[in-house]
Amino acid sequence: LIPHAFSPKEFPDPDCPPHFRARGMNPQWRHFGAWSAYADRVCRALSGGTHVASAAVLYHAEAEWSGGAYEPFETVVRDLALAQIDCDVVSADTLLDETAAGFEGRRLAIGSERFGLIVVPYAEMLPAAVLRRLLEAARSDVPVVFCRDWPRASLGAEAERDPWLAALRRHRRARVLPVAALAAAIRRWGVHDVDASPAQPHLRVYHYRTGGCDTWFLVNESLREPVDATLTLRGCTVRVTGHDALDDRTVVLPQRA
Image (cartoon, rainbow, N blue to C red; front, side, top):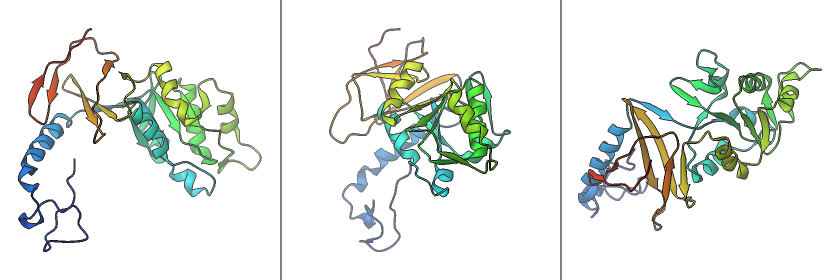
């Protein structure tokens, strides 16, 4: 959590909105200590452990550099976030590095994280090495989802052979889905970890595991609408305790196992 816009210049500094302290002239400054204490509690709770995310989303750099049509990764991340499905953005370099990324138990393993599927934002062109690695993922039983359509061709393939794309098209673990259908498909496959009922487009969920403890950090991104929902924490078989990090108090949560 990074506060923005502290300036050593005289107030007002037009290059530094909203200029928190404003040399004592910001009437909200006296409340900043409350925010700092909240941020400290949150950062302590979400440090030293492992992020738990459902999907790995391929970064779109190579698709953009190829000169072909593409969609940025933000398109996918936004739709998943609206459905409380968390993900990490993974570069092609990381995916191709066999010392950094591998396939274990039907999941993509990167460091201490495990992802239930790989999502490829729409790309007209992708490097042949990336397609070969995605085929390896599919053959390791890791679902690979191409958004909107298959790539038209690969970069760096032999002039008369492009076997990786053709094999991916035939593989049962690789498929094409529109971005709008992705969240529903992930729920059907059961690789997500949170369900909200009714739907809550303003709710964001960050799952973190540290010291044998699971934490779900919940954020309402709406400035006006409250979140009133029932959450199902998939795979959680114990009772949970709520914590209001702003007031630093325990919250009793109605729940059933």
